[in-house]
Amino acid sequence: MVLAEGPPYKMSALDTDINQHFQDAIDVIQHHSESPYSDQGYKYYETLGTHQPLGCQISCYLVTPTHPDTLSPVYDWTSAPLGSQHLQSSGQSWPPGVPEVSVGQPVALESPQFYPVLPVPRHGKGRKKLRLYEYLHEALSDPAMADSIQWTDTANGTFHFVSKNKERLAECWGQRKGNRKTMTYQKMARALRNYSRSGEIIKVRRKLTYQFNPAILQRLGGIDQGPQLRAPANPSGPGGAQGPPGEPASYGPDWYSWYGHYPLQEQWFSATDPRHL
DNA sequence: CCACACGGGAATGATC
DNA sequence: TGATCATTCCCGTGTG
Image (tube, rainbow, N blue to C red; front, top):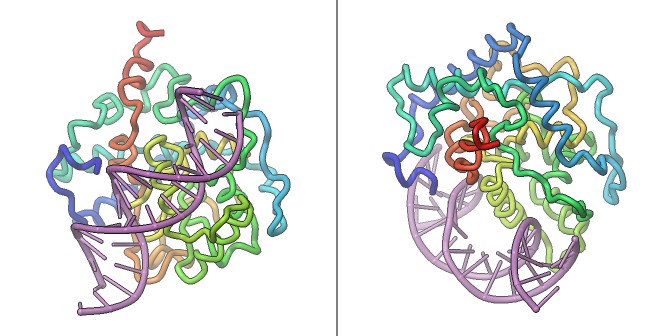
């Protein structure tokens, strides 16, 4: 586990508070919607593998095109540092693995082309094979799959599986890939955990909930930005109307896991240092 | 104790 | 043919 170096982590009431702080922080940031580097980040995204936009051939179901005005930056992601400050002010310390620069002054990142998460897609030959996160994104855009997978917070790219029907989604994925055996949620989740290492999708400390890397979201054509897409000022009730039942009302991006999992920390360190350019 | 969600090691398969 | 990534199996842990 990523927490190996730090003190054993345990979910507690404190986490709920912290997550609430995260949400509050997100709200604050959204009020200051002029993210200094979100645009810059997008410039970077554009340099990534923007080939082959998705949203095509779904064999299992119809695809609903994403909302036209999907260009709002997903800068919620950048609120991580803010959240971390909350963490620290709450007495929660970060593990040694967390890049300090990201904690202290991420918004001040001046090398937008080095947004600290995205594994650069292979150059040259693009991957033609459909990848799981692409499929999930498609499914999230498809109302027909809403009983299996839903956006938890489109603004920051979190989504969750519906416990009751998650197996159906997994099966559909397996069929889509033409696997020999039936895909199960367990196996699909195993693949998702691999994404945590590459940083494409991370696990959120919430039941059945994951979060897209914003760069991935951008690559996949943005996220829906319907009226409900903005994170509510205060997620009402347990995860709002869409959250899995029985879950705490507040949640937040798994910043800890995000940075902790990120395997390219050193690359990122050097990347953010202009001297290494 | 049980069911469920989750995490990860390791072997294997598929693709580039 | 090797590298990479996904799939598959399996076992262990934590939680309600």
